[in-house]
Each structure stands twice: as structure tokens, then as C-alpha cells.
Image 1 (cartoon, helix red, strand yellow):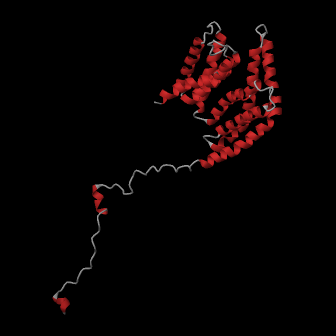
Image 2 (image 1 turned 30 degrees about the horizontal axis):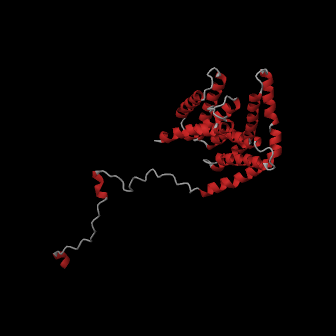
Length: 287
């Protein structure tokens, strides 16, 4: 019965979580292009949608075929040419890898937090391109970046509590590196077709390393606030949980009476009342 709702929900989550924002933003009038042939959107959107689908289905052997079928079907319905195998393979691989991490995240909240770091980093800075002329751009983007980190740290401790707090440092580092990954993929997508492979790789590496300095400079305070906010969030969650039930008694279904054989039934019988023997009336005693 679980798959009756999880698989349709995973299909919807794959598209909504990975492609709906770019589709609604860049859809020209009268076009039916559901998955635009852009490398950054195919990689990041496919991975984000695969993670969400894996979290819903929670089975690797079920979610991987689902996302592959949905990705290939969406590519075919959108009218993209099949000869662009590189882009199609990128979409399929990103969706399958995201689905695997999402399915594994249902068993470990730490894995789920690491898997969601890249999609959250991708979505956190999306308002930057639309709100460049507004004075409160720093507050909005900083709020999204800090809220994303707080949710990741909180989600990492969802199942194991404070024992998962040891992963906060590598999780924060991976969250910051995810912004560099997004910048590198977008740099590869913007590279001209006539550019050589070495120049494209150099541009991607430069975009990866140069993304950390403005991120820490602009949103460093929001990251500190996110860590300070995650501490009481985890503490309140653990306090609200019911106490851990005691381990089950292996002898709870057994009675306290020992099982005795037939030859030992006399042990459970009531012992007759003992009486003192009366003195026998004899002629010798009468004297």
C-alpha cells in the first residue's frame, strides 16, 4: 500500500523539486519544453529531484527505476533531440545518484542532511538574480543561506540526537562547498561551445574557489546565527520526545510458577495440619 502513494508523490517531487522553478521562469509563450537542455539545470535539478524522490519511496531498487523512467519520459515528451546523449546521460545519472542518496537518507538522517545540502545551496541564492536592485537582497539571501544550514544541522540530529552533532563540522563544510559546486557547474554551462576542455575546466575550478570568499564575507554572520539557532532547536526536539521505553522483558509472557512433573505434584499440595499424638490409655499408665 505504501507504493500506491509514494511512487506518484515521488514523480511529482522529482519535477517540482528539481525543475518547476526554472520551467515556470524560462517557459516561452507556446512552448512545451519541460526540461530545457541546460547542463546546470539537468545536473542540479535531476539530483535535487532524485533526492526528494528517494526520501519518499525509501527503497533504492524501487526509486532508481522510477526516476530513470520519469527522466527519460520527460526528455521524450519535451521534444528534446535524442542525439544529445551527453545531456540526457547527465540527467539520468544525476537523478539516479540523487535517488540513491535520498533512499539511504531514510535510514540515516546524517546521510539525508548531506544529500539535501546541494539542493538547498542551489535554491538559497536563486533570488540573487531577481532582486539585484533591492536594498534588502543581503537580508533575504542571508536568511535563506542561514535557514538552510540550520535545517541541515537540525535534520542531522533527527534520529540519533546529540550523537550526530559530531557531523556538524563536515556537514557545514560540505554545505559551503555546495555553493562552489553550483558555481562551477554554472560556469561550465556558460562556457562557449568553441572553448577548449582545459579552458572550461580552469573556469570551473576558478568559479569553485572564488565562490567561498564572497559567501563568507557577505553571509558569515548568518552562518554563525544558523549554528546558534540549531542548538536550541535540537535541544527542544530531544526534550519534547517521550522517554525511552525500557527494554522488553524476555520472561514477561511466562508465569512465576515452575513447571513441575507429575512425580513432584505433592510440592504444590497443601500440607496437612500436624497434631500431637495423645498418650495411650493403658493399665500401666493408670497406675
